Image (cartoon, rainbow, N blue to C red; front, side, top):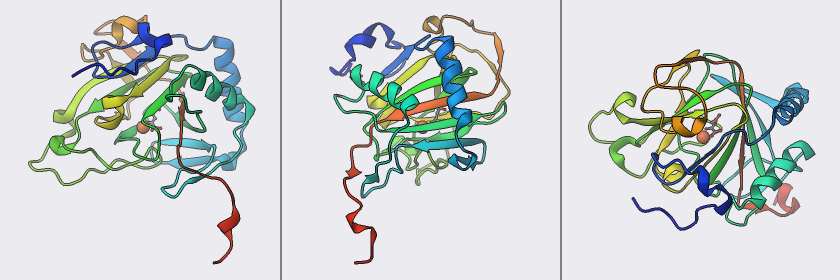
Length: 249
Ligand SMILES: O=C(O)CCC(=O)C(=O)O
Ligand SMILES: [Fe+2]
């Protein structure tokens, strides 16, 4: 597979060479102070801001993405800082991040394999807080166009020939340490599914392709999960400019 020509210059040194195009993994993207500040802000949010799903809870910031356009809501300052920082690095091809999903996983929780789908510019940037996790990648069913699912829901695959198990579709994993930044683009965004197994511990294998750049951990090590909070920062291209049509026609 060819390397795309849209490699982020500032992140060139952080490309994970053993994954398909394109994964950037930046250890210690934020400091411990920033991590503590961000966690405090997440837990300061009003309770109704949380949506409980099976296996995780989430906060949606910036508006709800919708095929007809997202009704944009003001981003709070503590998230806007990181939207600006990632946009300035060129993560969204010159576009500005305008949407953040905050996910919280307790030990033993996870997210089913899914693709993030067409409502977003095809780049997701993830800052991990509080604990490590393993993000696992899977071939789509039938090797075809991919599953239809968004990050707000579970993964459900289309019809696809002979039965294929999750295990047989598993490709590799990335170790996401607290304070790291992950950027997924191109084939990694569009074609492969990603998910987090609902486990309390992770044993590192040679299928964890960013181990050399994760800065810690060796094959055979077992890591115990704590509560992990992820900030998934994205650009939603289609935004509704006005509320003119909220009334009856
Ligand atoms: O928590 C993560 O790193 C993954 C979250 C995710 O896949 C999503 O929000 O779409
Ligand atoms: Fe996702």
